[in-house]
Length: 310
Ligand code: HMG
Ligand code: MG
Image: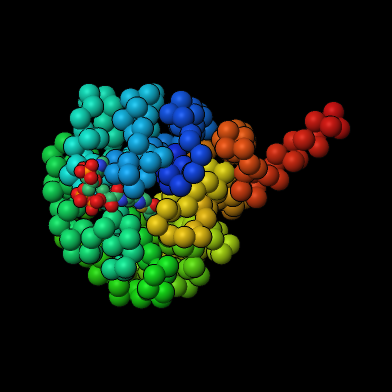
């Protein structure tokens, strides 16, 4: 039942950097994508086409999309919460288009209002033409359902509330359903219950987990998903990130930590852990702080010790 291969969607450049208060140059964002590609990442969430007033850090979206190399076999996605976002993403020459777009709804009304300024029902009506136009342009559409395990404004969230939004996403033709624990409060059995609702309506290959590690539960939650056969997860290099509309939310689970666990379990990822550790160390240096990834820090320390002994 446990999958032999797992695909990680690297969300560091988007989810990781969107919340950074200090400016991060487009050149650094582009270099981050290149380093991730060199480490074997085949799915990268690069940026978002959202309001620059709401998320200033992503204002350089077009510049970043135009600056990244597009090696064959690598899929690049961007967030597009409305037609304005999709039109902006597709205003570039075709070679700079994303391969996939992400619409992001919420399992709770309160978070929907805070994050995208509309009700759940209104969000679905905004996503409907985005899905149709993206499909017409040949792009895949992924959904993220935020606050599926808990909401900073509402509190507890039930699996019924998650399933309601899963069905709404399915109804407008979204191809892939991501279940997101935005504030990291989920624990393994509740995570399985939420994912099972997505699996009722989407095939296994089109369901993913997106776990923030705020309460240290993310690896356990990924392990719980593996037991359901789920084999797609979002992760963030060096554990970067947080959501500007979820106060206190830390980054997604660190890519290095997840890869360390999966490789230790004999599960293939196609990723080069050493190169990821280098990349995590590099971007953390750019941001002026140590990597949040425990595996990243441990492996960097071990290298330092080995270098000192040599
Ligand atoms: P709105 O204010 O309701 O939209 O924003 P509006 O249509 O009323 O327009 C207001 C202004 O925004 C106008 O500009 C529009 O042109 C502009 P003005 O006339 O005032 O100068 N605008 C846009 N500009 C650029 N790109 C656009 C766009 N749309 C409108 N696409 C909107 C609605 C969703 C755009 C806004 O609320 C927004 O940008 N919110 C930010 C949402 C966001 O990026 N959140 C973080 C990502 S989600 C996340 O991190 C969770 C996730 O990781 C999963 C998880 O962990 O849960 C995915
Ligand atoms: Mg997130």
